[in-house]
Each structure stands twice: as structure tokens, then as C-alpha cells.
Length: 242
Image 1: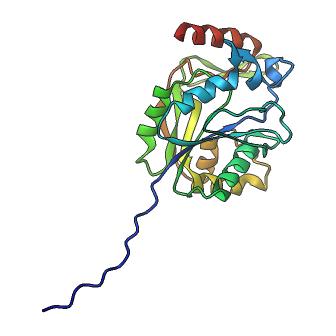
Image 2 (image 1 turned 90 degrees about the vertical axis):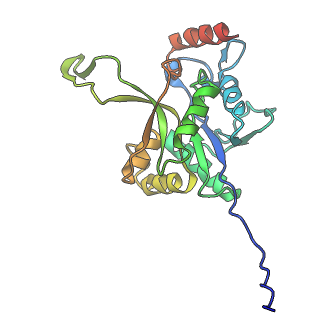
Image 3 (image 1 turned 60 degrees about the vertical axis):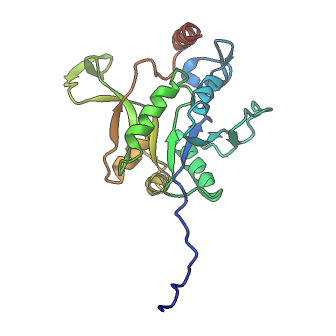
């Protein structure tokens, strides 16, 4: 009789997970508020709490990390399923880079996906986040929510119009932006020496690495609360949903 086949332990690769990362260390100076805009009340809650609620409602997101300024005293209590990291940097890119470094140091796989989202985009919905995950999960690069540019785009010089740009094939970038942890961390690391010059979002870092992120059509309501008048509009939308 043939000898019995030797039995070897089998291991399966660790499942790929999705993590959410919110850079939350900005001062929000353009909002004209006495405190960082992400903590300003909107529809009865600090704005960032609405943002977190949408992300926490997406079952495929394993961890939700907030990157705040060192010494940020706002978070006396932390919502369930949220981790607060006091490693925020001088710029958004620096905060994201530090957050990714902390995520890797905690044991997250470089093959995991990270969804980086603006804390001030408090009107994003779980459905929009799920749509981005569906579109990117099997993509070799990853991508971002975005909208085709609907308006005429002008170039300004000295307060006057210097030129009108062709708006075809131009999109407005939104968040979340979804990329694998390892490649995104490497793309930002390559820009660290220049102080992350020219890196305005995660997609721009991925582009500098020679890759082309996928554009996933989002929704106009997923705007970034930036100016004082934006708070009233965000409040109206949130109250209409409830």
C-alpha cells in the first residue's frame, strides 16, 4: 500500500480589511469659527460626529481612526469603534502619513485598504461609502469619490479673469479616497522630504507614484464644509434627513 501522504499544517492568508482614517488636526481658519470647524455644532452635534456615524454604519470598515493634534482636549470620551491618535502634523498630508504609520505599527497589513475621509465632509452617506468600496475592492490601484465639473472654470490674475479653461474631462475630487495601506504609505513617504509639496489629497500622492486612481461618481451633497455659510446648508441637509 502506498505510504500515507504527510500532513502539513495549512494556513490561509489573512483577510483583507478596510480601515477608515480621518485627518482631524486642522484649525479650520477659513470657517471663521472660534474652534476647529470639525468640532463646531451642526444639527445638534459636533460636525465630526455626523461624519463618524456614516463611516461606522458601513459594516465592511474594520477600524475607524481619527488623527488629531497632539494635546487635543476635545475627546474626553470616544465613540465605540473609534480610535483617536494624537499624531496630527502641520498639514493634511503629514497627518495622513502619521496615521498610516501608526496603522502599520499596530499590525495592519500593507494589503489592507484605507479609506481617508475629510472630517468636514459630514454629509457623506453609508451608501456612497459602500459604493466606493464596491468599485475599488478589486481594482489594482484604488480610487476616490468625485464629480464631473459642472461649472465654467476661470483663471484669475489680479482679481480679473485671465482665461477660461476647458472643463471637459475635469472632475472635482471628494473623499473618501480608497487605496491600499502599503502603496499609499510609500507614495507619501516619497514626498516627505519635500514637505509633501503639491500633495493636496491621497490621490495626488498616488499619481506622483505613477499610478492612475479610479474615479467613482459621488454626490454633490458630499461637499466639504469650509466657509461660514456652509454650516447652514449642512445643517439643513442633516435635518431634512432626520
